[in-house]
Length: 291
Image 1: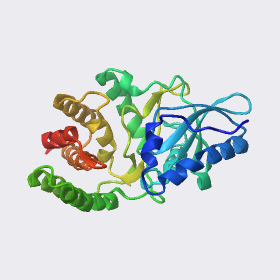
Image 2 (image 1 turned 120 degrees about the vertical axis):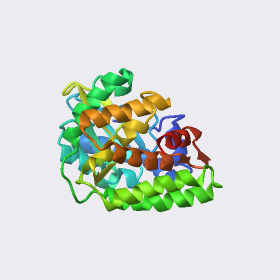
Image 3 (image 1 turned 45 degrees about the vertical axis):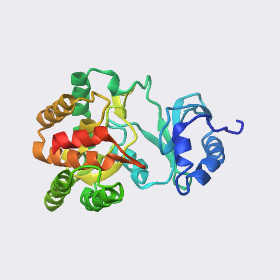
Image 4 (image 1 turned 30 degrees about the vertical axis):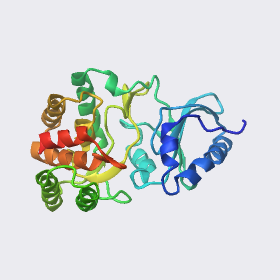
């Protein structure tokens, strides 16, 4: 089947190459891909986009069936991606066909045509999300991390990042985010399986179902957190009014607690404002609007 060559000018792989352990992983990728092609009798094709912690490739199986091969850099967010896909069993999410935990590889069904939910108008996209999300919010426990435990870490991390980046926004906003996290931790809600990364770029048009979720970053916690990435994400509009519309629409359609969604979104948006050595002014502005 031939030796695999890394794609040129892949921003995600360049980014990984400067992280601890990242260069060694990137250098091993041809070996890992070749191992997967042999194990699953695959022919691999072009890569999808420029994922920041993974390499995702179009592939064909031994009978020519359309598949996806995904290899992820070992990191906390992707630790139980395969377990989440297995738990969902293809109900509203892409099917996991096989896994190679030692190599960090997933063999997945391919979504065709695979256009993202972000190509729809906001109102139509939110209607799709409101249909999918309750199907994904299933009762769950181990091996997934608890949202409340992550939230405690986020609170400490926010304070540390704020200091290390020279206090880039007002203390009042930091205190509001951390205070909201404390209240959510003290009142955790009913635990269900939620994804940190359910946004309009991670829901694809498919054939088996009209739309399927991909790329979960799973946690177990209350469902109000499950809409955070969609609310704060920029795929369906970047203005304050767009963010508020998404929050209000999802709260209404999914019968969520608006204040809990606001608190989760504020804290998570502020955490994501710290991007390497820079602080995202757009994320801080969104957090101010929510705070």
